[in-house]
Length: 233
Image: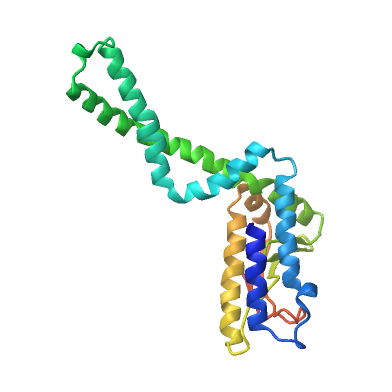
């Protein structure tokens, strides 16, 4: 569903912004390759993924957007409230005459507060598992770059030049003919830089990249020879 929606938006944007004959047909265009690359990444990630793991990733993608609600439910409610009730029943020996509402309220408050760090710990463990799903793909990219080959990741093309410099460039460059190409090039540069920095947050990739000079280049779709922007970072 994600790829169908992404591909649909891309096709709609292309039809509104570009016109034949200056630009090639959509099916032959580099933008089509981006969708294919996304699918290849997903296939790589899901190659050995069980149905249970696949379900987890789909559900967690939505749950992680509501972090504090998850922490409240799984820490304060599902753990804290249950523990408070069980201890309340235990203290009263399961006899109604020994059950006092003030004692129950006190236990709910105490265990509810204690449940917050438990909810945070649980959230962080699951979120780490979710975020680590890209590590295998990034490790494969490191091997590709060490071999002196080009690594394509999302909208990035990363090339290892003479084991000294990593040249990072864009695959796509969206703009309307009515827009200022220099302004759009700067926006594209910021997007490429941000995407690269996200990859560089992975410790193993950072360990690899720190030994290289890094250059960011922005190219217009039909001109792969003359970069609009070429900056060292």
